[in-house]
Amino acid sequence: MRDEQSGHSPALIELRRRLAEGLARMRLNKTDLAGRAGLGRTTVSQAFQTDGPIPSAQTVVALARALKLPVEELLALQRDAAGRGGGGSGERRGPGRLIGEWKPHDLEVHPAGHSKVVDDSDAPGTRALPGYVRRDHDRVLAEAVSDVAAGRSRIVVLVGSSSTGKTRACWEAVQPLAQKRWRLWHPFDPTRAEAALEDLHRVQPRTVVWLNEAQHYLGNRSAGERIAAAVHHLLVSPERGPVLVLGTLWPEYAHQYMTLPAPGGEDPHSRVRELLSGRTVTIPHSFDAPALAAAAALAEGGDRLLADALTRAHTDGRVTQDLAGAPELLTRYQHASPPAKALLEAAMDARRLGVGLHLPQAFLTDAAPDYLSQTEYDELTDDWAEAAFAELAEPVHGKQAPLRRTTPRPPRRPSTPSPAAASPAAGTTGPVYRLADYLEQHGRTTRTHLCPPSSFWYAAHAHLTHPDELNNLTLAAEARHRLQWARHLRHRAAEYGNTDALVRLAVSREEAGDQQVAEILAQEAAEHSNTRALVHLAERRERTGDRPGAETLARQAAEHGNTDALYRLAVSREEAGDRQSAETLYWQAVHHGDTEALVRLAEIREAAGDRQSAETMARQATEHGNTRALYRLGPF
Image 1 (cartoon, rainbow, N blue to C red):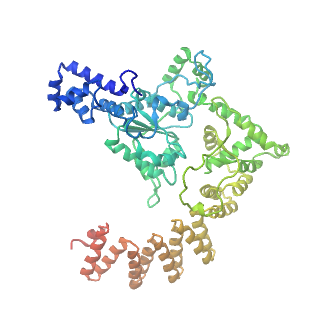
Image 2: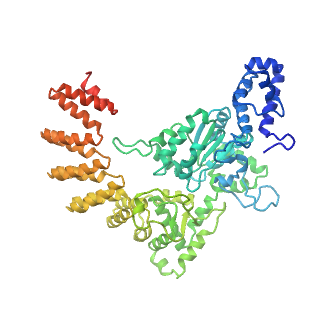
Image 3: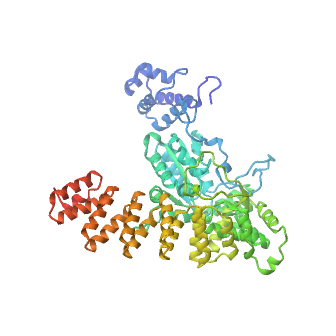
């Protein structure tokens, strides 16, 4: 944007104004200033000249220090003027747009009340926000905003239950940055995780990175750890700052990411845990007495939305949930017709047991019947499903629906190969629905100890096609002793390419004596980078005395990058006194890149008195990054 009279950007005009004010306050002339700043007289003169060029960053830093002005603020104006901070043309801008160009509801701030402004105007279509009540977590956010305004990058992740005001708090926090012409980037297209991974490296200084519902970014199975690493790199790179990263999480996701793994177990969220450590702030689920008093004051001052909410939430303090429509959602669930309630409970069970956000209509329809009593089932009409879905699509207070039809975004770039790509068509056909967040969480809380009926498992087997979802339901069925359904679901998950299911099937076939099928399944899993079945089968063959079979499977695992089986077989042979066979297996592991096997061979040579060979092997291990031989064998 340019000043119509001067042709310069507002940022450049403001930069020169602040330099001029500093010069006057210090009672210097430009010659004196040039001497203090270590700049040439012409450079200083051009920096103040109305029609002069944009001063360089180095010039601005020198002038700001000489005039005792805030360096980062003046640098931000210089970047805006030069087109690097979102304020003018020039260099290619990073992702996002000016904060002032966003509407809060576009950033997933829950709408409240009717689609009308709070005051008495009749402006149509204006989605209202109630007055904002500041609480303890707002002070933490304000400190973060102050830090980034002073040039220090920060990240804050608000943790709280559904509809507790997390996103609204973030929106209110960034308003001071809007006045400083900061940008805001909300990655979501084609998916949140893909967008973040694609463009995090392009984020420019003075940008707010908006990771609302951060589980869609940090919890993504294939990209979450890489996104966490990219965010960390953004925060610790001074040349890319200042930036502010804001995120929100439900407590169960925060707990999942922050929990340390069991000793020896997998650690799928190590980078996420490091990123979140010390950077989360818990937001209370209800207003305390001071917050209720502040809300009441706003209501008395004319805020009709808050006044209406306080008529219901003044005792339990759940003001934000009321404003977001949560109580009405709960009422709609409790008072729903039997078929509609059956659909909701099937959706609740699907989400809490590991099915994704988008629930196929065919699955819900076939899952619902056994949630009904016999009398309710007998009263079903031919169009019961159509009527029930229509009932649940009606919006409640806050423009939410208990169960709404949704359209997943189509992929906008070539998909990468995955285990499911080589399986039968795994795409969901037909309409899909999404359960309201508040009802999903309500279901997780109230239905924890309930087991879905048979129609649920039947519908999952008949209609769900995502391999990970099918595997999640397999584990859920096993935990609830629905073993026949677990077996059928595991076969279906394997058909669609879930490697965990393939591994479990391979193990079960081996235990049943069907070695040929077990090896086929294990090989298929290994081709998709899961070699656990091959390792397991190799160890089992070794225990049963089938040494050649064990070695064959161990070599196959090594060819797919996992030398554990070769090393373990070698250890087993060594413990059994078969040194020659053990060394052969250790060498095979070494040839596949296992330096620990090389260290063990060095130890064997040392024990046999062959110091020279031991030293040679230890040096080779050290050259490949394994220094443990130095500690075990001592100095050479």
